[in-house]
Amino acid sequence: MEMVGAEWRALKEEIARWRDSGKLVEFWWRDDDAGRPDPALCRLLKLASDSQVPLALAVVPEMAEQSIFEGLRSEVAVLQHGVDHRNRALATEKKSEFPPGEPIEQALGRLVGGRRKLEGMAGSLAIPVLAPPWNRISPALVPLIVAAGYGGISTFGVRKVTYSAPGLTIVNTHVDIIDWKSTRGFCGADLALRRAVQHLESRRLGRADALEPTGWLTHHAVHDEACWGFLEGLFEATRKIDGVRWSSPAALFAGRVGSFAERQAQGT
Ligand SMILES: [Zn+2]
Image (cartoon, rainbow, N blue to C red):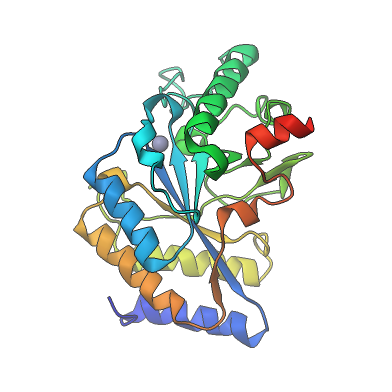
């Protein structure tokens, strides 16, 4: 996919505005719902490897099989995508594995268990970052996960603050390429690119946190050909443009980055 068409042009122009003001456009990529080895996950990892774009792979510990971590390149960072990805919200609430109604001790216990399992399987590729399923977590739980060993959290939407608690860095995603409400397929290049341009523009004009990199959110398990084609085109096109950087998730959450085991050893 070439950078042609009005929306690609708009992205190119926005990137040029950043470049003209001496600023780097920082992107990052998170993909959710990894667990079992399957053709879609293989395709995702191959895309990451071919495109050389660092990938934050959000893995569900209770669904994870050891084999998905074998041969993972060091450019892949493993994030924790909940624990079992089971919806515990009331029928009247939006879906969440960690709704306000669940006793906090119970949620924390489950998180730590999931963390240990993931750490045991992914080793040093696991970074202590929680990406809660459905991008939702009870606000009361958030400050408490620091003591459970987490240094970062990632949901969806412009972050209001950089740290949700001392030592807990927020880096969210902003462009979801799936149309969940109707087709559950690709939302279309126009819409995806428009969302990216809007986020970049908001950052540039000070309407959103300028330092929060623009996060692209994907879900390999539901990708249709249009999703894969779009991502290939996006990576290919943006890699060639001056002034764009695809940042490594480990670096973005830096400050508290390091494996869970290391952090335990250091007593942090
Ligand atoms: Zn999910």
